[in-house]
Length: 345
Image (cartoon, rainbow, N blue to C red; front, side, top):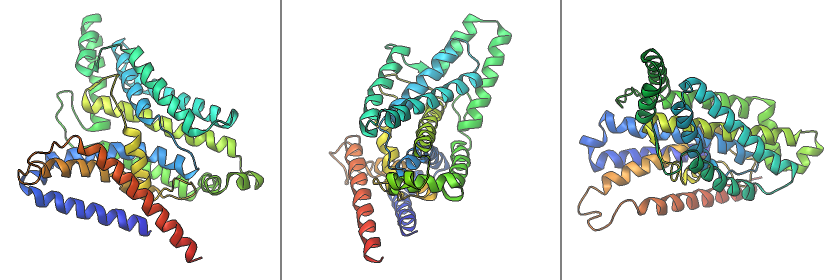
């Protein structure tokens, strides 16, 4: 609870600073919509990796899976697969990726860090092979479908794509953003994951595995099956993230789509109270932790517009440093609370 209150207080302070820098523009609904959509997007990724961290695992391939899924989604549609069917296929592919990761980790007893680090390069390479040297864009997809089929088929395809885009990200095909529906998607997923983590026997299994996997195994917990479940959950949500990304940004570049986003997700989970040693974490904490970095980026962009603050400093190079410092801060806070809890026992 202390960690949740701490992150919530941090968000309140950051929003106050954001409004203080340039209230006229920072408080506009257009800016807040962009921030909310980014927070919700990273919330989806953080839910998956957060549950994985609770069990003592890690997944460094999330960003590459996001990029691969976005490109695969576009390529499937470019080849005439209806948008809904393409989305289902991509999510199924994400589940298969989770099965592969879990099989290597539980079956061959390989380290999660090594397996998912290899996956980071493999799935990025797969994205490049799917669309070598060519970004995937929604407008390009629509153009190819229109040129390769009948007007009736094109209209049906366009209507289905527009429905999917409005339902998942709140945009029409012209790019106009209404309410950021990613927030709704994230909240629904958070509710489902929250029930699993905090109110089901599976959640108790996951916490037990994170605390002491060997003891959990001796207690009768099916550790192998549960690891398969959490890795599949993590990769499936990453694939959903790829779909959301293409629908939101309208295009995806195989070389860079989703690059380093695994760090954003892991940082959000750690800030929200998930211990990298396993056995600790809450779903509300994951949601709040995922909201920090997108808000921080927005805050920095507005602070950078003040001439006397960053007159000669470019903003973009600062972002990676702040991500690293934020992750370090979260790790130090995790160790502090862990030691404090031991003292009070």
